[in-house]
Image 1 (cartoon, helix red, strand yellow):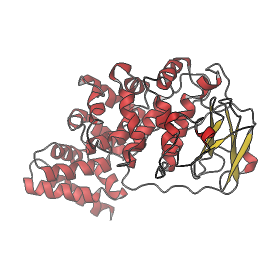
Image 2 (cartoon, rainbow, N blue to C red):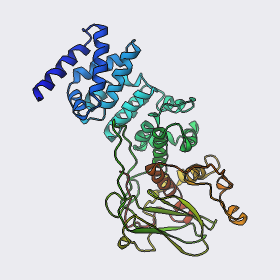
Image 3 (cartoon, rainbow, N blue to C red):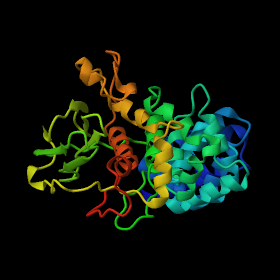
Image 4 (cartoon, helix red, strand yellow):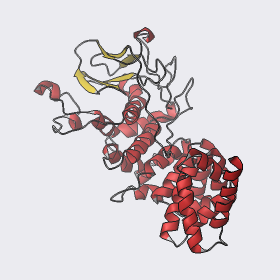
Length: 401
């Protein structure tokens, strides 16, 4: 069977080669796209650099149907580690296809690995405009959905984050409206991941650091893990701007519960990745629990500080992100809010953007996006809200997987 597959792959590569007739190459591209829908087929194609080179030539060629099929195949195959080297060697040709959606998807898959992301970012800069064409594409009526994951994966790198935090280009401000973009969860997820990464300079402070988010555009969506039985919750202290939590990450597959008390408002905001987020007024220390999440035996000390601590270098960015020039916090909170009604005096204590929301207001439906939104809130807020800073000690760190 393996020998037959190899023989078929060799025949397909011959049909894709420039020496073949245009009609034969177009048909072979369609066949390659079909083959890339299977994991074994992707591995087979990824191990044939000549076939990848022929597909790249077709992707940039004059025949729209052949180009579409070839590029779609390359997007799928780019998820395979064996294809990374040949595709990175062809970066100049790939960058010429930006900011098209399939090209963004292909590069997003390559950029999941930081070394590859660094090569892509370097190549973008060598072309001159850097991230500018990608950011300009955000202004299109319907930006390509794969653009968000590409920006997210490039923002794994400090130089990628600095590009998005470039104040002269107002790059971050271009991302903010897409936290509630309903036309594409793929694009929305990528933008939220990029914002989450921009809220912290990873690895620059002492002690453990959370990992930046990196997204994959796989052929088949991964199944979401089920939450284990048990209880976990968040302890919020009224009016302090501090939040205390326990049960995070307890048990495999649990996303845990995260909470944040909004400084000076007396309101706490609680989110569980597999539960309904909610605002609640807090008049004293309050314990909120949800069944069906991590075990109660995993409770942490109530005095535990935030696991996400900002470095000194990030403090200035945090202040800018929270300032009126950017005002990032409402864009992170609003997707998590629903149409709850509160008494007049309680409603007025909420941030202005969260008051009197329409009855049809929907919360973010995707658990992983909800988690990244809340992580971004915690990354950008606690040190400024609580008066703490990089000198605080943290007993542990979080991660995004």
